[in-house]
Length: 149
Image (cartoon, rainbow, N blue to C red; front, side, top):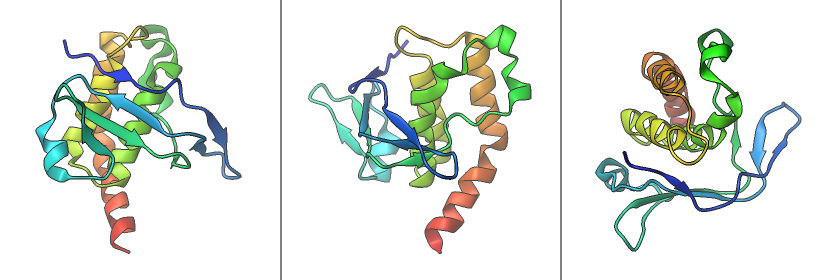
């Protein structure tokens, strides 16, 4: 399995007046594989590492809501601590906001959530990914309308 690796320490987050999370410093990840769709999309957050893998950078000051999966779907006893989704949620929210390809953005969430020493359980990873595929179009379309305005 491909393993993503955070290149910065855990994100330092503060909350703004509306209760949304704000990154206090940039967050970078090496996805551990080359994702052609992200490079073809050409967003400013995408680069290539020396070994040819895809790297993403979310700038400091980015405002996001984290992994906003409805609590009913979390099934906490089966899926564990919500904290495990934090980094995956940051990158996913950023890619949606920047209108990266939706299916690729959802895959990046899965890839990051399942990587590293704090992997989510297979059930939680599947439920998170499935939730994004089923309901993510609403947020994705809203972001597209915001960008066009």
